[in-house]
Structure formats: C-alpha cells, structure tokens
Image 1 (spheres, helix red, strand yellow):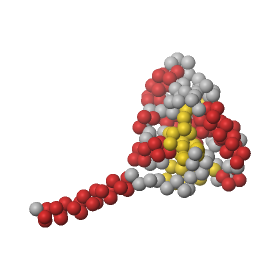
Image 2 (cartoon, helix red, strand yellow; image 1 turned 90 degrees about the vertical axis):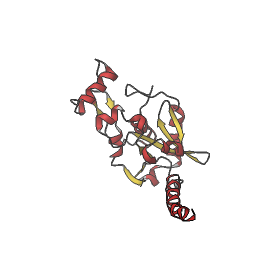
Image 3 (spheres, helix red, strand yellow; image 1 turned 135 degrees about the vertical axis):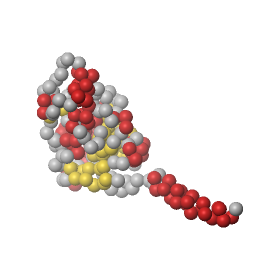
Image 4 (spheres, one colour; image 1 turned 120 degrees about the vertical axis):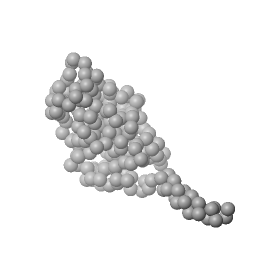
Length: 209
C-alpha cells in the first residue's frame, strides 16, 4: 500500500504544479494606461469584422486604472469597464497580447489620459453595434478603440476601410452580410477591423503571454 502511494505521489505533485501555474497571477508591473490588449473570445468567433479581415484576434480593448485596479475598456454588451482578471479569463487559454504606442512616454501625458477618461465616461453604457455603423450610437470593439485614440490623442491607429475594400465573394461573408444588412448593403460606410489595429505601425508589442 505504501509503495503505491509513493508511486502516485510524484504524479499528483506534477499535476498540482500545472494547476498552480495555470492560475498564477499575471504580473501587471508592465501595464500602462492606454495600452491596447487583444484576445480571442469564443463568444466572438463569428464577429463580422473578424470574418471579413481574417483577424488573428477577435477582441480588443484599452487598459485603464480605477482605484488602483486594472480594467479593460471594451465594446461588450454594453460598452463597459471589465476587471482585467475577469477579462483575460474570457479569452482562450487566458492568452492575450498587449501593445503600446511607440511614442507612449511623450504622447500619454496626464492631459491625454484625462481626455481618454472623458471619452470612457461618455461612451460607457452604449450598446454593442450589431450593424457595424460608423456612428456613436453603438460600438463594436475595434471601432471603440480606434475612436478613443483618434479623439483623445489625434492618432489614427490604422486607415479606415469600407466593405468595398474586401473580397466579398466568400460564402461565409456573403451570408453574414445578408444577415446583418439584408438587401441594403452599405458598401462605402467606413469601418475598422481588429486586424488593422493589430498591424498598426503606431504600436509595438510589450507582452504576448
């Protein structure tokens, strides 16, 4: 009996170490306000901008602190501030990528952060934009991030695109367009995808866990 326990014990310790590593607290010492975070969330696998651009990540938000705690400002349903620890757990395998403005030290001043704060207060509670319209009545994730940076910092993270810029012949894309717009397809309405923001020349990768 004792021999069997000795044989099982190393396996148990090994499994325990995996569980411990998986639940390890993420080191937030590298975080800065205004950093942009990307993840893959199962609930957004069929997001239109992701299908359209074949984006590597389907969710994007902005890091922000309140009361000494880190949050992600994102266009969920509705637009909200989500505690970072909760946000990262919603992604596949707790994986995320954190990017930052190349000139962050000179751009992200107290005044700039105050402007971001104003926009957060203005946009909080707005609904998710299921029609992907370029208005402030509702937001989808990449639209929210793009507009915050453009309005608070006067930085266009990526060129805006339209549906006409993409290959719309794919059957999945055709079906999604029909589902969203019916027969009135806004081919020239501006939009921005997570892929475009991820590839922004203004950003550098700081963390890829």
